[in-house]
Every structure is written in C-alpha cells, then in structure tokens.
Length: 243
Image 1 (cartoon, one colour):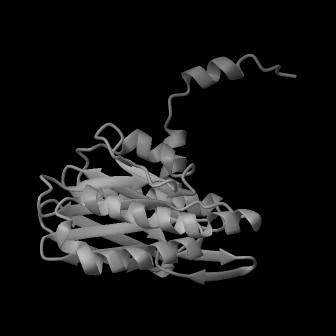
Image 2: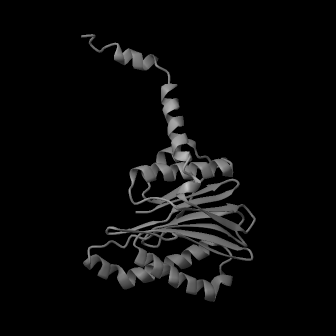
Image 3: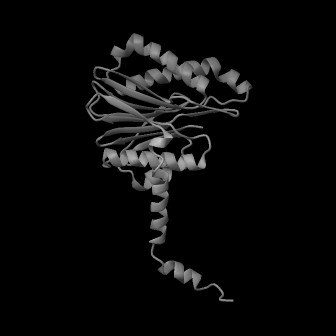
C-alpha cells in the first residue's frame, strides 16, 4: 500500500510520500513522487497503484514531455496529457491484469504551477483518466492508504495554514497511517513549492531523522485526553454500581 498526501495552501504546495514497496513477503524502497521542472514549468507527480502500471504510464508521459512540454503553459494541460497516457496503458494492460485477478488502480496527484497559471494548482487523477481540482474548503488530497490520516487533516488543516504547520500535519497524517498500516513506512519524501516561485524543492527523511516525533506526539495526545473536562464523564460513571 502507499501513502501520498498533498496540500494546496495559500502559501504554496506541500507533499509527503512514503517509499515502502511490498511484493509478497519482499519489502523494498522506491520513490513514489517525480519532479519535472525547467524555467517557469514546475510540476510534481505522486502515484498510488500497481508499480508496473505506474512505471509504464510515467515512461510514456516522460516521452510526451520531451516532445511537447513547450505546449503545456497551464498545469491542467499537462494533467490531461498524463491522463491520456494512463488511458493508453489501460487499453494495453487492463484486460490482461483483470485476467490475472489484478485491478487497474493507478491514482495520481499532480501539483505545481506553469507559466500561464495565475496560481499554484493541485489535481487528483483517477484510473479512468478523469480529474478533480482541490478546493479551499478541503485543501488536500490523499491517495493510497487514506483513511487513517484523514481525521487530523479534516480537523486542523486550513487553506490559510502556514507552510510549516502544513508540513507538520502531513507528517502526522503519515505517522497515523504508519502505525495502523504495515505497508506504509519510512523513508518519506517531502516536496515543497512556494507560490509563484517556479521552484520545487524536495527532501528525504529517514526513520532516524524523525524518531523522536512519534513519542512526542503520543505524549501530547495522552496529555490532551487527560485534560478533557470530566463533568460529563462523572455523570456517566456515577450510574455504575458501587458493589
């Protein structure tokens, strides 16, 4: 399974992806986010799904970029181009995968800003090749193992959140998923984009880089539970028999 999260906030874009790959009993590490940028073209792409489908679609897309990148002056046009390659791969491989008992399940997050975009953009692409753009009311996308990290994002993340807070929330969403899903783990890749900069930066964190954070977060949660008001609890507990 995969964990990929990307946020569009007022300040820019934040993305976090795990690198765990599981095949049967074998576990390896591989990058699940790619960055494509030159001049005023800045774009990152995260994927979740069968690795063979991902690799093939990305290879086809890289050829398109080599031949037509100058035609993409807005990010949605590049998203459409990638969607086209996903459909090509689906036409080539979907039936064979189905016969083998496998689903064509490539989900993608594409973020960035191209020269004629009036602001940074964030899209999620479905396996069928259709896409949606993120909204300010819920300024994030999760793909892969998405259920465990979603609650904290819904409660805390806002479009106005500063980038440092957004990155902390992305880590906490990953950590919640890592605790509950055995196929999600370190290292994690972070991508950051400041609006109108046309410069995506990336950084990889190993487990030892952040090993102090899970314990700190657990202690904070424990303390918060203890500090919750007791009156309503006492009302319920008072009904227990004293015998």
